[in-house]
Image (cartoon, rainbow, N blue to C red; front, side, top):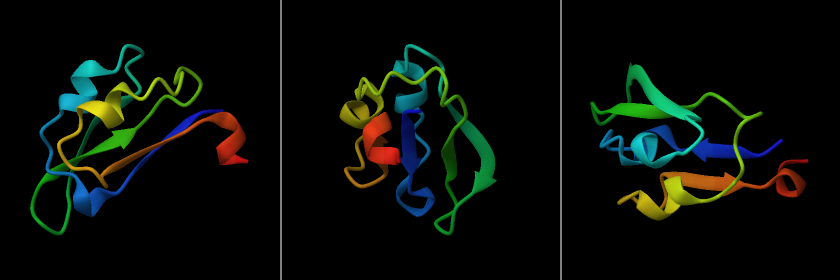
Length: 73
């Protein structure tokens, strides 16, 4: 199963990745990170195609990592 790894403390809560995901695999967590930002969480692994749109749209280069199925195992 594909996966998006979110580094909570790198996320600034802009939600751009949430809006660009064509499969709705990301959502705002409702929780705050150590910097006081609400961060994103990955919620739908079965739907994720590892397209990378979330990673490409994120202004924080180390906040998201997209892992294709073979990389997760």
